[in-house]
Image 1 (tube, rainbow, N blue to C red):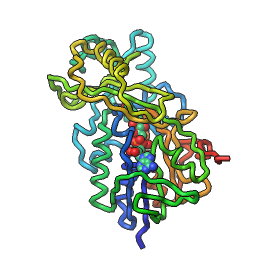
Image 2: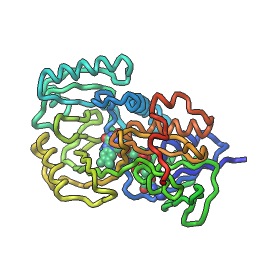
Image 3: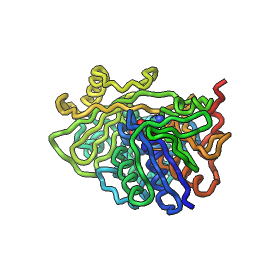
Image 4: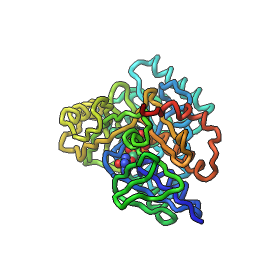
Amino acid sequence: MQKQVTIIGSGIVGAVTAFYLSADPTLNVTIYDEGIGQATKNSAGIISPWLSKRRNQRWYELAKAGAALYPEIVQTVQMGYSVYQQAGTIVTRHDPTDLDALYKLATQRRQAAPQIGEIEKLTATEVQERIPLLTAPEPGVFISGGARVDGDKFAHNLLKYAEKRNLVRHKGKVTLGDQGQLLTQHGQQAYDTLILAVGAWLKPLLLPMGIVADVRPQKGQLIELQLPESWGDDVPVLMPEGERDFIPFTRSKLVVGATHENDMGYDLQESALVEDDLFASGVKLDSRLTKDQISQVKVGTRAYTRDFAPFFGPLPDNPHILVASGLGSSGLTTGPMIGKLLADYVQTGQQTDWDRYQLPISTYLDDAD
Ligand SMILES: Cc1cc2nc3c(=O)[nH]c(=O)nc-3n(C[C@H](O)[C@H](O)[C@H](O)COP(=O)(O)OP(=O)(O)OC[C@H]3O[C@@H](n4cnc5c(N)ncnc54)[C@H](O)[C@@H]3O)c2cc1C
């Protein structure tokens, strides 16, 4: 008998989970998505966790593992450079001492993370040679393993791939009953396993079950520019000190972002002030940018927890309902590993090594009373 696995949310977590589950012909997989405010669709797309200053070792293990999964997923689904490309990242520092420290950190971290790839210390001129768009380059450290991904296209390709196997997709918002009943616009739907990959919306979704998830929404905005010139596929991503990130996508699309706006709830309004601020940051790097080159302002809602760490797995009192949330500003990086672990759990019931990647899930879930 086929098992019914229903996923709510088709961002990176839902899409990667569906991708891995699509290899199992004994499963019927269904995804529902409301399609509003999705972080994945509106993200900047940097995959480069290795030089992060974050001290949370579990987050680092998860991010490292997620970044390492991209090449094999991309190859299986045959995605092109406009979706994912390991063109490298350059992290700049004004101060030569800081630059040396960063280079040392990269070299140390490569011992346990060969995915970092080649590491080079670059002068400002060399940085400009790698990213010709820059008019005010600074010295930096280049790592060849860094990548950029178009989150929207990546998730879309995974879902298309899974649809050819065992996935059925529905658009629309779902709610839960007090016992975890799945309520859709076509009535209550049965499931064997329910996966709530709903990002910033986990808290309202779980409340009817008397569970309070430690998840807060954070607004993020970025600008996308279409430039008159085009460049090759191998231009690295720039993570400049003190400015917004600068992501040259194939072949004339430039992304500058992103903001981290707390206390804005689920607001999805574009803000002219923020657009100006993002543009000003872009102009500091490439003084030739003009405002009429802005083709889009994107707004998404990230989920974050009190310790900024993601969490995932079965609810403590209901092993048939799995949740994943709190991926914050690095969810494109951690998301693939979380999706893989959730799919493994559906198939094996095992949580092998999960404590390497997260605190117990009960840390982030409370009773409503
Ligand atoms: C501006 C911005 C820039 C970013 N840049 C980067 C970056 O450079 N690198 C990086 O690693 N990460 C980045 N991130 C973070 C990353 O995008 C997110 O952490 C990640 O995409 C979250 O994925 P998710 O699957 O958990 O949630 P989401 O992608 O938000 O998907 C959740 C989906 O669930 C749906 N949903 C919610 N409730 C319901 C319901 N009741 N019924 C039906 N559907 C529902 C939503 O509509 C949504 O489509 C960025 C995020 C933003 C906003």
